[in-house]
Length: 382
Ligand code: FES
Ligand SMILES: [Fe+2]
Image 1 (spheres, helix red, strand yellow):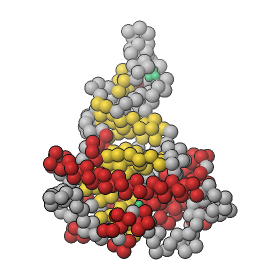
Image 2: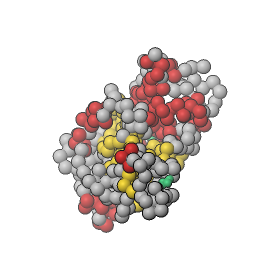
Image 3: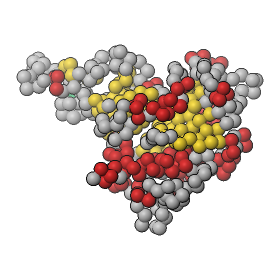
């Protein structure tokens, strides 16, 4: 039996993560703590809480969470639980007109989580009690950070600040550090996979499968047009040198982001930000994919597309937005078979984690290495 330590070898000798980390539900409990709670995990998108007072309940890895946009326009994340008797607070996304009010005994919290009202808590029409100090009973906040319209959380509050942890990727893509605009209802979709979440990341990291899994894509963006991206910190992926969209028959195109280097005239990059975010940047649009593990054997991909200006949200561009979303839908759907197939294969007795191509799969190896380091982190400290 090989072990997690066999991942931490030079790529030529390394094995992939052991199969029990994919197919064994009890392993995912440990993973939740070590991989997700100790890092900056992707939770939801800023566009889901567009206005002050917008709330979005998200259940993440078994935790009920609440994403809120406060009066100042900042996004905060709280445990979606009332501090009184532990009632789940909000069940539906929406825009609150007043405070966050518990449906059980109507304790009310403002958008920054402060407890503001405890009706009748001291008896009929007596709305306070000496034993209950509102200052100590605010909502439980989760450490969060917003970048690229993604809301990240670090549940254990032990990761370096986001900008420090991900300085390298922020620097690499600093030209895209500008407002972008979600395409609306036609520019988002979800896919559900019967597979472990890590295999969706594996597959996204490499372009090796392109000729076999994406024959249409490969006809204009060939294997040899791609390059590997391997970050020193927690990201890896691949890029293409021949991005050349054709989304309309009459020569219309989306406006490009302003101020981009010439490189982006033809380049596009696809990066997995570990643990669970997939990103794509192009001169005319970007996309975010949050990989949501639902247990060890089900994975939901939340795919959202964004454009360079508000003009792109108009009806003039609707056909192109729809076509672009369809194009990506086709590509990501084509991947489902292999991501699910790798999961099934990991139930085989004796499979030993396989081999990585030192040329084609350094980004995937990087992801395994990153996970392995975290899974072993306590042991390493001993
Ligand atoms: S549980 Fe929320 S007010 Fe009682
Ligand atoms: Fe693919």
